[in-house]
Image (tube, rainbow, N blue to C red; front, top):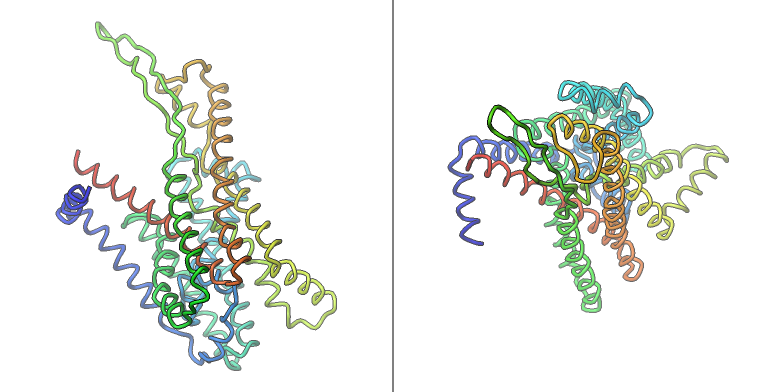
Length: 424
């Protein structure tokens, strides 16, 4: 196994194109981390540390910013506006036949146009989130009183940073390896590990050793579970019809169509967290509005979101639903059925056309149930451990670990695919 790893590493280093792709990813992430270290002028770091201490909402949001929110940098919004925009566009495909056709039936050109709409929508969302955050941080004393010019400058800086980060992520996806947005989130998680470990060592307490052991066990369960579910497939047998061309017979071979148990990957977790963060963001912003009705709504939102049981149930349900939703958006049984029929392939015992599409749809629905339940369970597992241990950082760590493991698996598979392609 070690020899195979060394030989694969040598092949990567020797192949100029593959090596350049990896170096491009590393260079883009380095630029991102460099920009994420540039804070907005006038930040009170003492007040900032007090504001972030034990705040689960902003800890989760910091994951999406790639660590840029923890020091109020020009990258403080991260890829959150772009993710929110993508969610809205994906939802619209369920309601608009034109958008659905654009995404599924018009090929690469249609997807590029679809992504262009997502980019346009990112701009107003980034402006709204930028204004909300800066006003909230100003009210909390993290950022001192700003003049109108300073306020506009700060908003332009964070909105530009978010759009620049969106562009960097798309460059990584196009010229590098892996999904750019996922790698940006992953780099922020990795960048926060040294600080997290140092806090654990500084606050080391012998009485908490069982808690640390429990957290380690949870981490290993998440890693093992994510690997198993990500690699799990349900093969559907496929047979190609025999065709006579002159004196020769073509076709007649059998193969299989692999359907992944978790078609959506880590996207449901990101979608679910984005939805959970929206009401909390609104509550934090509206807390300063002097209106009895608004304050009643804010108190109700805070009561629900701060209740671990309600939060865990909502988290599980959203992950479960988004797993099915994203699978339905990205996996089209009708298209697969048409492609099989065009190539002269069929599923033994199933009629071509609509029956094949229905059969594939039924299979993907059943296996997605397993993936959705598992994703939802491991998403709330750290919350369960937190309920017994009382340490809020376990929730953030569990979510971050889930995202990190999924991104690493996806990246390794794509590197293996590039290596295999060059070997042949």
